[in-house]
Amino acid sequence: GESVGLHLPTLSVQEGDNSIINCAYSNSASDYFIWYKQESGKGPQFIIDIRSNMDKRQGQRVTVLLNKTVKHLSLQIAATQPGDSAVYFCAENTGNQFYFGTGTSLTVIP
Amino acid sequence: DAGVIQSPRHEVTEMGQEVTLRCKPISGHDYLFWYRQTMMRGLELLIYFNNNVPIDDSGMPEDRFSAKMPNASFSTLKIQPSEPRDSAVYFCASGSRGGANYGYTFGSGTRLTVV
Image 1 (tube, rainbow over the protein chains, first blue to last red):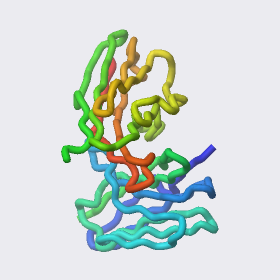
Image 2 (cartoon, rainbow over the protein chains, first blue to last red; image 1 turned 180 degrees about the vertical axis):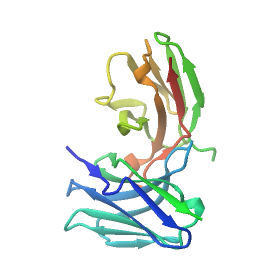
Image 3 (cartoon, rainbow over the protein chains, first blue to last red; image 1 turned 90 degrees about the horizontal axis):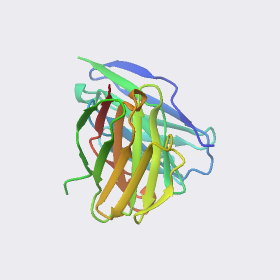
């Protein structure tokens, strides 16, 4: 079956530094990927997405990179701020379902 | 748009009692998903509906769990009887085209504690 895993369960960064969160996926047929942010006491929220015909997509302070050769996804956050502290999930879409990774907890140190 | 609305936000109940969680999806979304989140297992898909019809309930833990979607604007997840191991945060999410555009929108969740 499909599986999505994260390399690092926790990540601490200094405010202002860049953050990189990694994710491995197993289903080469997955064609759409999303990064979600979950703050304490809230549901996951969409951050940025990328389709399998792209290898990079940029948003405001966030960039998602997709390497289909090694089935790897990463989320880069520029100039990390305290408000970025949250758990980040990658999700891959196969058919009509998304499969979520276990999440990485990002802590921003002021 | 008010987003996906879940109620109650918190529920504390005694073991053996029936618990009903409620969800109002975003208008126009044709897919609805129920997830359970725990520290041990992360986000688990319990069941999802397309156009009010249950499509895949393989994630429902056991017969004590049931879900319904009587119309496009309302769904319930029921646990009867509840057990302490059911304690978790339960999320409802909705999407269009199975999430093929912008994935799912999640509600704020219901934190269930069974004592």
